[in-house]
Image (cartoon, rainbow, N blue to C red; front, side, top):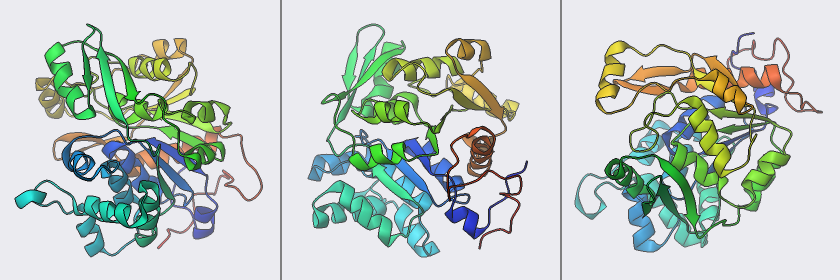
Length: 353
C-alpha cells in the first residue's frame, strides 16, 4: 500500500497524532506529517538554555522559545515572507544570534502574561496545522550525571562536560524534579491514535519530556499505537557508541519498561564519504541490534527514512511521515466513528492544494 497524500476530507479526519520531543528532529517530522492529517499535537521540551533561547531565559525570565518556534515554522501556513521572518536570525549588535521568531514569542509572552497563551496566540496568527504545547509551564533546568559520578546543570553544558569526562551519561533529571505536565498535553496523549517519540537528541530532547509528572502515566494508559523513531547517526556529546537498544534502554530507564513496543529505524544507505566525515567527529551510523531490542520487548521496523543534505545525514520529512502513516494504517486497532480509517485507498486520492 502506498501513502499518497489524502483528499481534503480524509486529511481533516486523519489520525490524531501526538509527537513528543524537541529540536530539529521533531520539526522535521511535523513538516511531513501535516500533509497527511490536520490532527497533530506537538509536545515540546522546555529545558533548553543555550543560544537565543538561553538569552531570553536569562534576560526576561521566560521559558525557552526555540524548540517551540521550530515546530511553528514547520506547521505554519503563511506567506513566504512570513516564513522568512520567522527564521530570520540577527547577525549584528546586541541581538546577534537571536531569532526574530523568538522575539515575537517573547513579546506575546509579555502581552498575554503566560508562555502557553503566547504559544496559542502565535499559533493562531500563523494558522498552524494542529497544536503546539510546551510539556510544562515550569521553569526547569536539565542536570546530567555521568558514569564516573560527575554532574553538570544546564542543557547547553552537557555536550562539553561529556567530552571532558569521556564517559557515558548515566542519568538526566529536571530541576526542580517532576514538574507538573500541562493539562492539555496529558489530554492530547489520552485522545491520541498514535504517539510518536522522537526523532531527536536522546538526553536533551526526548527524555526530558518523560521526566515531567503525568506524561509517562498518560502514555502508559493510552491504547494508541506507540512508536519510537530512533536517530540515524550517533550524536557527538551524547550518544557516542550507542546502538538502537542502548537508546531504548535509556528511555525505559528514565520512564517505564515497555513504554513502547515499536521502534522505527533507518534502512537507507549512508554514502561512504559522508560516513567517513562523521567518523572523524566520533559519530557513526547507529547499529540496529534487533535481538537486544527484542529482549527489551521492542520490535524494530527498518524503513528508508534518511537523506543527505549538504553533507549531513537527516531524516527525510516526506519519507518519515509516509512510513509513520503506513505503520498506523497497518498496526492500529483503535478505529472509531468518524476517526481515520486505514482503507486500502485512503492515501490514493488527489493531492491537496
